Amino acid sequence: MDEPTQTKAAPDLREVLAEERTFLAWIRTGIALMGFGFVVARFGIFLQQVQFVEHAPAAQAYGLSLWFGTALLSLGVVVNLLSSLRHIRVTQQLNQGQPVPAGPSRLAVFIALFLALVGLAMGIYLISMSGSANSHAASRAPAMAKTLCSDHV
Image (cartoon, rainbow, N blue to C red; front, top):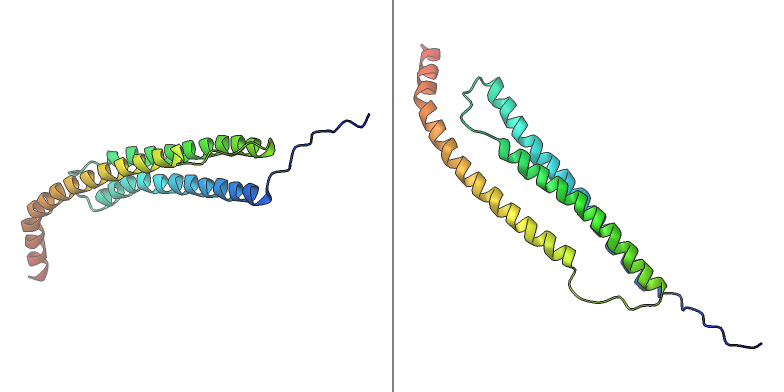
């Protein structure tokens, strides 16, 4: 009758709150990635509109900004989904009294490596575009000088 009942110890409140803060940080990271991806994707469209308004010949293609932006936006969605799954798993482990394994977060390492690759690709893209932009500007310089001189006559 007086059998000892096993009760699960409640998880330490500090661990639960730390997990909550970590989850919210991941959510902020995902939202920031999605917002930055949207800005990058729209920037190419903005530059195309500027060229159209200035009646400049379409010498540069800004289609890569759409792909970079879409990649960043997609990464933000993946971060939010994976962080939700991680939060559910860790919370269940804490509630069951299981130790949460310590170590580097695979999600964080993956995102850092992916962002490093995207940043490298964007840097290469910007350097290649600046070379073509400089040659395009140099080819337009005599025409602009002629236009400016004719305006002052």
